[in-house]
Image (tube, rainbow, N blue to C red; front, side, top):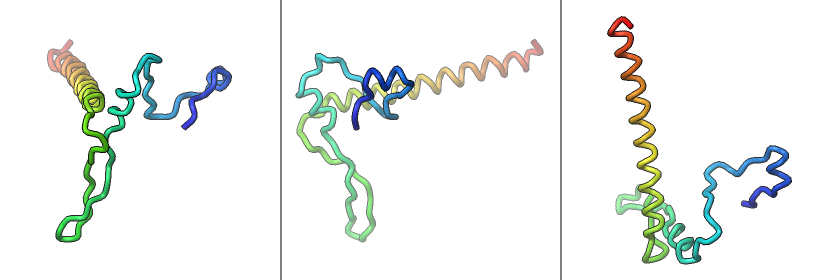
Length: 96
C-alpha cells in the first residue's frame, strides 16, 4: 500500500482506512513486534474451521500495547456516549 504523496494530499487524497502513523524514529525491532502475529484458519479434530492468532515472532509487546490502546479508546468512546445520553435523559425526566 503506497503512501499518498504530498501532491496527492494537496488534491484531497487521504491515507487508506486502517493506516497507522508512526514517527520517523521508530526502530525496526518495534516494527517487527508490531506485526508479530497473523490470523490463520485452523481445523479442529471434528473438521470445523476456526480462526486463530499465531505468533510469527517470540516478542510482540508493541502489538500488545497497540491492542490495549485501541481497546481503551473504544471503551472511552462508549463511556462518553453513555454519559452524554444520561445527561439528555435526565434533562427530559427533570422537565428542564
